[in-house]
Amino acid sequence: MDALLESGLALSAWLQTAYPGLRGAMTLISDLGEFEIYLVLVLLIYWCFDKRAGMHLAYLLGLNYVLLNLGKHFLREPRPFWLDASLNASETTGYGAPSGHTASATVAYLYLAYTVKRNWAWSLALLGVLVMAFSRIYLGQHFWHDVLAGFLLGVSILLGYEVWMRYAHHRFRNQILGRRFWTAVGVPVGLGLFYFLGLLLLGVADTAVAWGEAVPTAELSSLAEMMAALGILLGLGTGFVLEGSRVRFSISGEWWMRLIRFGVGVAVSLAILYGLRWLVGELLPADAPILLEMALRLLRYFITAFVGAFYLPMLFVRVGLADDLPAPTIDVVSHRPSPLDGGKSSER
Image (cartoon, rainbow, N blue to C red; front, top):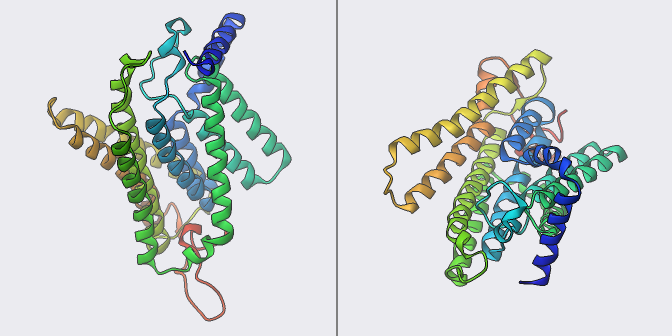
């Protein structure tokens, strides 16, 4: 066995043996890195506190999910408990590296600290990332190098975001609606084509490895997670562009209006996400082609993201739970306000 894998197994085994009382706390911390938690967080920020920050954080997390699953499927690395069942980890079917919990925590926590711009926020964000990474190692879900790769991926995404904001965002926000819309479509389509081309070049996964029994399930899981990630990115991108042009909702309003927006919106979003999953499960025959299953999965996550980004803000405006901002104008002096900024540079 590779020395790197052996060192990771030894670390997880030692942590569980030396500190058995930490399992409950580590499980709770790890659960905070699930998709549903970030969904609720993003919707809370986008609908109630800071529209611009909510949009940017949502898209960064969507991009993170795509790149993360692309990396997992290309690298095809094992998880610790695949090699050592005594680690007593909960079943996870996808490949190991990079760590998704660590990458997502890095993107979310550090972006929020970047938005707050306070030393205490940076300290809390870094602590949160470290604790999340530690929980994944402790639970035997990831090797130490998996969480390091996840952290580096998250930091790379944020650095790319900074470059985008400095050098490209200004040009993008002044493009016509159609060009911005097709850019939002082109990014996930391009990443999807790169993903499938990469799989074609890599070929069939090797099952003649120590974790060979887990490979078939991991292959299917990786494909399913990529379809979900591409659906999210496509739904968010197109939804945000259209919202900025057709709706332009404002987060202003009494606290109770924001509370109703959040409660109703989250309920609708989760109902769509899980309701469509139930509906597909009921209607799709057991022998349905895998490509059809994956297409429906992409569609389910696209609809969830698009409704949250576009249709729910439209609903809030129409029923009086949110105001709409004036339509953007163009003159020879000032630039067109950014649809990605909700028609303003920032709204808090």
